[in-house]
Length: 513
Image 1 (tube, helix red, strand yellow):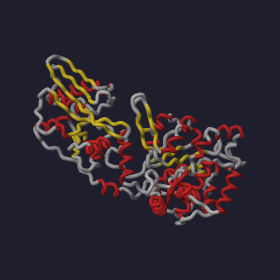
Image 2 (image 1 turned 180 degrees about the horizontal axis):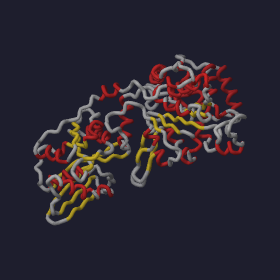
Image 3 (image 1 turned 120 degrees about the vertical axis):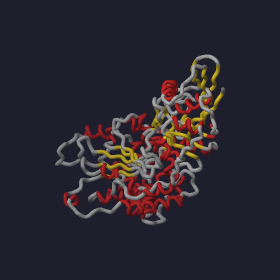
Image 4 (image 1 turned 45 degrees about the vertical axis):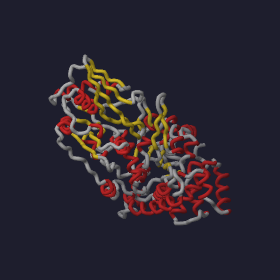
């Protein structure tokens, strides 16, 4: 008897429907074909134990299972439930009363028949809805995540017995229903980290506000204990709230990586990723034998924080250059290519020297010029050119630390940032892939960052004295455009240009040799 059951495979952040064909015939043997990986090949042991512990069995017949399309690599243990249901119906151990072909069925089986969570539930649900399936049967742990997709019946189950009873005895399963909009907007307020906790550092807060308003990459340079990490952690709290489309896209990436929260559901806050400096280039940009998204993709629509930037291996930093420009990363293998989105804000921090202090005669640790040059040369010029804002962070004096008065709350800063972003959204509404100033290309810079003769002369002087590159010239214009947006100014003035030039600390004489 031939039975067809439907599952799904995830490639990149998109899913493809997999048809599992189960055929039983005279003879003995268990043959699984269709390019399964080792985790799928081992499924027969899990399936046999799970069925036996629930009153069923894999009969002594010749069973052939094909996972079509047969030339596409399948991986992971999420097909256990799909294969098990195909075997039960094909061997007539249960009679199918509900319509099997209307459902996508996925889940990893434990030996007692209970189900373990799977990866990629959200992209699978999106694809199931697009291809006209009525419902999606999956582990209860992933049900809330998949239920984000409206118009699809999401049935969360805890054991294989519940699935058997649903198809064989027509015992109904309770659909999981999520009011996505209500859940999404409920969690927008009350950030975990707030700028009101930061004492002093008003000029740095201004820089962070500009960076958030225009989506600019920023690097913080300062001695140990000056507050670089504290400031970076609070940046997501002033970024504009995720839109529903951004939240869905971000949740899909985390779903594929198996990093959605235990409670499931849609992501309501922008991601903040802070990998350790020992990270490999593959872990940062993504990849592996079976490619998975890296840290830059997990930070999509959020912040990637690289603490102590010169401590990262140079090869790791260099592989970020292309994703910083293109805002996606393509991973190619012999048989397939996947692309992960990686539109993130880069926030980096570094000490100004190996000892942590720079040109300070009272410093407890003094580094020689050769040591400083070797330390700073780990960061290439092309990478620094892709960072719009360079700012020095100085230690907070005792008088500021001991103040009782709290600083400005992230909620108020976010309002100004959101207003500036709204101006940019309107400005770029006719352009498909540009939503804020940091995403502007050369053509857009020429159109939207026009400056008068006085400002042009000021910029020319700065370019000559600081020996800036052509890319740095564009960065200054982008940042000045954002400053003008925060001021509510339609035109860029000399004041905006002057402030933007100040945020190129590493271009000044005395830095980087």
